[in-house]
Length: 308
Ligand code: PSU
Ligand code: MN
Image (cartoon, rainbow, N blue to C red; front, side, top):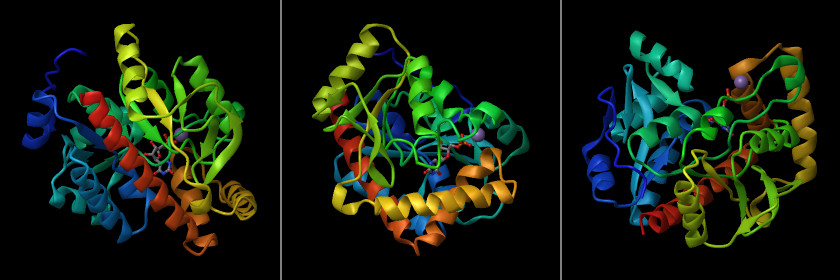
């Protein structure tokens, strides 16, 4: 078992999450940038609430994580979720933004990095997201690599995602995950997924076939005293994926638009996602929601296996 965790007093952990962690019950952390910046209103709030219901129905306590009025919250209430989804001026917070949000009293959706960092400090061992941040195309010029990667290298949690979106440089992202000593396994596949599509074209060295196998992997990491997250890549099913040809065409257009409009840095992910959503007439949104549902379902199963 990992150490018993006492969250720092600056992090507000809801009573329900605190009790579940203390009793060793399964808890699943969920990020909030996907709600504040990744999905359009009003679907964002519907999705945030539906994900929590889905987790509960699986017998697991959900812990949506975000920043409310500067305070980092692990286990947002329904009202707090609504605030992150509907109020103007909610910022996107990675780990480096947490002290700024705190000092300025801002509301923030937390990225995978900030969510995982906070979840770990609250004693939560499993998390689900849609897509991870990674290395952006052109990063050899811009140095634009998501802080998700270095933070996950030092945050011993188990994280379910559908890989990274194809808006990123997937090959470079996989190389960086290797450099950072972050284990990546495919769930019932040895193909790395690309979020909207089942297969990115890249192969993984290892696959796992059950939540118990993931739990054994997380335990092995802990027994070795390693601190990297275990990444579980969970592809969307073939019948639910975005048509790969359409996907490639629209992505190419989105990348040109971003470059023409000078969109860079932390604005690029929301810009590209929004472009793809509009260009597919909402079909990418349907895929996005299906991907997220699948990751939440698997995350809940893994949380139960890890809680034993
Ligand atoms: N990928 C998505 N939707 C998102 C994100 C990633 O498909 O909303 C968010 C996640 O919260 C991720 C963050 O952690 O973007 C990465 O942003 P950046 O590249 O600025 O670190
Ligand atoms: Mn970036």
